[in-house]
Every structure is written in structure tokens, then in C-alpha cells.
Amino acid sequence: MSANCSGKTDKPDRLPSDTADIPPTEGIKYTGSKLRLLPYIIGEIRGLQVRDILDGFSGTTRVSQALSQLGYDVTANDISEWSEVFGNCYLLADKPDSFYQPMIDELNSLPGYDGWFTEHYGSDDPQGKMPFRLHNTRKLDAIRDRIDEYGLGFTDKSVLLTSLILAMDAVDNTLGHFAAYLSGWSARSCNTMKMRLPKRFRIKTANSVTREDVFDAVKVRHDLAYLDPPYGSNNEKMPPSRVRYASYYHIWKTIVLNDKPAVFGKANRRDDTHDKYASSVFEDFKKDSEGKSIAMQAIDKMIAETDSRYILLSYSSGGRAAKEELSEIISSRGRLVSAKEIDYRKNVMSSLSRTKEWLNDTGKHKEYLFLMEK
Ligand SMILES: C[S@@+](CC[C@H](N)C(=O)[O-])C[C@H]1O[C@@H](n2cnc3c(N)ncnc32)[C@H](O)[C@@H]1O
Picture 1 (spheres, rainbow, N blue to C red):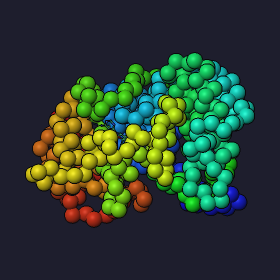
Picture 2 (picture 1 turned 90 degrees about the vertical axis):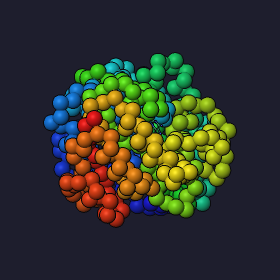
Picture 3 (picture 1 turned 180 degrees about the vertical axis):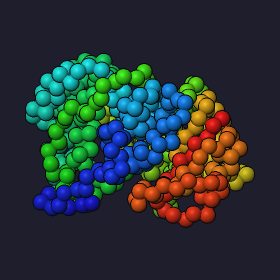
């Protein structure tokens, strides 16, 4: 949604109405975030004899945050640096708010300056086409450098970085990712970014946070593995390199690392999101010589190698995954306990008595949850 600075406000992130007993979670705008699916994911897990859970592609960590609050020991794993930071903030940091608040107050009071972020991501041009207004990138430059000067350990630093990322996410000029920026300025981009204490909860469970390739993470034994892999984009016009998670959210990685990388293209993406570097195998929708999709073979291998009694697999109809192949994988790698189809726009869930049922469905906004027992 784009508007001038005097224009209307952007839509808030809304929860569906039946989530009263779902613990509150926090996160950035994220393609594939399972915020709206939390009631269904939790509904599948409740009632199973499970205590510790791997969230193998944790992204925003919303699923991990909810599960930890419900009493499960959670391992949040994702390949991305900023997800590791969020995991540390919500699942591991156990100092009281009073430890972080004075630093957040000081960071909010810093006068901004023109640094690396302002040079690459700030503008006041009426045309927009940049992710942030200058007054916000100037603050970002000053705050990010000051955070390093505190010399904190990684977990405490993660609380401040999470706060900073949430503050910048609230004033961006995008449609939810950083592969392209809006013309003109969204209403929210005109606001002044402000860091706030992340809404952490009291940690009562034994959590861990890892930043591993999922193929390593699934080898560790858990009672249940929740697996929500990327399924690519159904936007055929987009080259795959543009729609990878690393390309979409490059800016959060740069804020975490503060490494001032070489950038390229109109969106000033980090050089390490370039086509010349290998993407996640789950985002590779090429076929091999036998006509099988490389991504589907990766899902097959992942499920085969998962050392957990239960696997809860997410699938979204918005992706390019071949349904037939996925159906075969599910039925050949274990016992299907349940298959659920969710139309979260309508807040409707139905059980599929046989996996095959979903193959003929052409609905565009369906989410599926497959619970398997190995
Ligand atoms: C669909 S999103 C997960 C969303 C998450 N469940 C949530 O609610 O926010 C897929 C995630 O997979 C991660 N990813 C991609 N390839 C990976 C790999 N090989 N190992 C671990 N994580 C990977 C991406 O960084 C991305 O966060």
C-alpha cells in the first residue's frame, strides 16, 4: 500500500478472532509467516505426547515463541542471521527489562548522522523507490554503531537488534520485502522510527537456537519437528534469485552484521544474494534429468533424515511445489496421522480423509498441515 506522507495509515497485522488462547508473539512482516496459522499448528500438536520440538525453519520465530509459552522445550533453527537474533531475544534472553531499557532510551535519543545505511537505503525524493526516509536511516546509522560500542554478549545484543529491526520494519516503504521499493512514500515510512522493548515472556522451558542448514538440524532427536520450508513464489515473471528469502530480507542481515557489504541492482541488495551464489536447495525449482523437481527431492531427503517421532509439515498453495510429488513423499516416508486444509482468509479448516483429495483443489490461498508419524 503506497501513499503520500499525509495519506492514510497502513493496515495493521491482524489476528483472526478465534485465537484468544494463542499466546501473543512478535515479528516482522515476513512472506510465509505462520502468524495466522498458529491456532491450527498448535491444534495439531496439542494432545500428542511431545515435550521438545524442533522448529526447523523458524523465520520470524513466531511458532517457536508460541510453543515455548505453551510449555514445550523449543529449538528454533533457521539459516538466516536475523532469525537467530530473534530466537535469542525471545527464547534465550532472560535478563529483566530494566537491563535493556536504559540502553533503548539512550539509543532513541541519539542524533542521527549520514552513514552507510543512509547512503544506500535512505531518501527524501518524492519518487520514493527507496526503503526508508532519510530521518530514519540517519537514526539507524547512529543506533547500529552505538549498539556495537556497548560490547554486549550475543544474546543481550540480540534484544537490542530485535528492537531495532522491529522499529525499522514499522517504517518501511515496501510491500513486505526488500527486493523492490514503492514509488512515493507509504504512510508508515513518514513516521519516526522508535525502538521499544521487545515483548518478551518469562522463559520457563529449555530452549535452544541454532543457525544450521536444516539437514543438520533434523539429525538431532526431538519428539516433533515442525518443518515449514520455502516453496518458492508462484510469480512466474520473477527470476528465482529475486524471490529467495535471502534476497527479500537482505537488509535485516546487514543490520545484524553491520558489515557494510558491496551491493548491487536497483534495490541495493547485498552482493551475497547475487545469482552467482548458490541458493537454498528448497528454492531451486529446476528439474533434474529425470524430470523431478530438485526442491521436492530436498524435501524427501529432509523428511527421510528427520530423527523425530512426529513431523508436522507445512505446505502453501501459493508456492510452485509439485503437489503430486509432495503427496508421494508424505505417503512413502511414514504414517499419515492427519491432513488439514486451511483457508485462513475465511478462517475455515477441513480434514482431508485421504492425502490425494487435495491434489485436485485449485484454491489459491490454501495452507496445508500434514502430521506424520515415523
Ligand atoms: C516459510 S519460511 C518460515 C516461516 C516461519 N515458519 C514463520 O512463521 O515465520 C522459510 C524459512 O526457511 C529458511 N531457510 C531456507 N533454506 C533453509 C535451510 N536450508 N535450512 C534452514 N533454514 C532455511 C528461510 O530463511 C526462511 O526463514
